[in-house]
Amino acid sequence: MQVYISVDMEGVAGVVHVDQTRRTGADYERARRWMTDEANAAVMGAFDGGATSVLVNDSHGDMRNLLLDELDSRAEIVTGSLKPLSMVQGIAPGFGCALFVGYHAGAGSRAGILDHTFFGRVVARCRVGGRDFNETAINAAVCGALGIPVALVTGDQTVCAQAREILGEVETVQVKEAITRYAARCLSPVVARQRIREGAARAVRRAREGAFSPFRPALPLDLEIDFVNSACADVAELVPFTERRSGTACGYRAPDAATVVQVIEAWTILAGSTMV
Image (cartoon, rainbow, N blue to C red; front, side, top):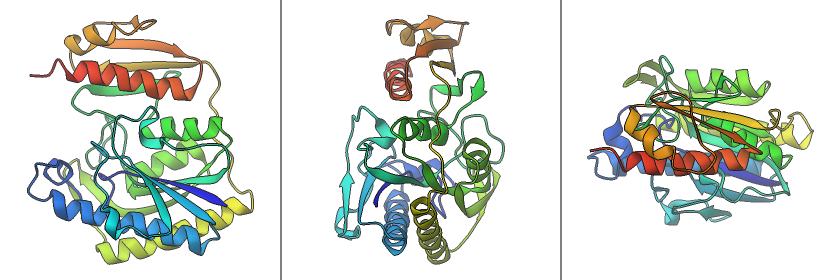
């Protein structure tokens, strides 16, 4: 079985503040090491569960965070940006399941560490079909369109609950309990890694048994984003076929989940250019 792993940073044990997640932050180097360690735990667990190959996608920020010389040598990695499929770049028919590690709650969540959806500086809320969609849901839909189920999600209690609500009987591993947006009760990184390895092994074994179903929301997909201000919506509206729905909201009727990701990327890159 080929296993795909998407790794973010905000959901990693010990990460609670933007200073840890930005390359210019004083604690960034420590946080990227924790991120690499959790990626390794998932890789090891995947092989424990019967994976024959593993592809890891660095899915945080500029997507150049994982320490390649410390990553399990059995895995391959997709690194750098811009990526047409962003956090699920490299997903393709043939993978047996996907694992989402270090994920976080969607924009506007309560008690979710560093809650946001794709670009927190410009996105206040993201909906698909009128329902709040976080990064887990959107990325799972891209995987699901290719027949690939998401088998594991790790992070705080809020993203784990959101994953179960969206995906059903997905494996989850909670590595911290968010108290507020910037505070959490965390497992030791050592304990978190062990639980992630065990969870990944369970997830891959269950995937081999056909326990998971691909996430396939009905098409077409009605994407709507509430931006933080009208200037963001002004520039997002420049993307062809975008519908301006209010002073701060834009919508787009997408034929598939991959298009949703690409429209979000285009909108947020443009919207980010307005921030001063």
